[in-house]
Image (cartoon, rainbow, N blue to C red; front, top):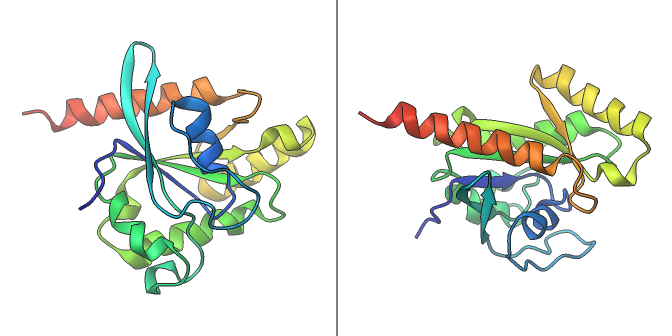
Length: 180
C-alpha cells in the first residue's frame, strides 16, 4: 500500500527530515546522527493557522536509489501520493547544490512525474551555522534552483512556521485547482 500524505519530506540521509517531523507534529521518529536512521516512512499530523495536513518522513535518498541502492528505492512510490514535497538540504553539507541535485536526479530517474510535484526547498540545520554561512548556503541553492529557498532550524524553530505556512498555502491552492 502507498502512504497517503499531503506532504513528503525528501532529502539525503541526515538532512534533518525526522527532526523536522518531530518539531512540527506529535510523531516520535527515531533521530540519530548516522545514515538511514529512518527505516520506514513515518506520518505526522501538522497544525498551522487552523488547518491540518499529513506529513510523511521518508527514508533518505542517495545516488542510485532508483536502482535499489540504499533504502530509498522501496519508498520512492510513497512520494507519488503527496501533493507537495518539502526538500530539505543539510546546510552543513559542503556542496548544498550537489546534495540537492542528487535527490532531484533520483526523483527524475524513478519517473512517475515525481519531478512535476510542487517542491518547497529549505536549507536545514541553520542553527549549526553562523548567520553569514547560513545565508551563503541559502543563496547558493536559490541561484542553482531559481527558486525561493527557506532557511530553517527544527531545533530553534527559526523559519519553521514560515515553511509550514507556505506548505499549507500550496496545499490549499492545489485542492482548489483540482475541484470541478
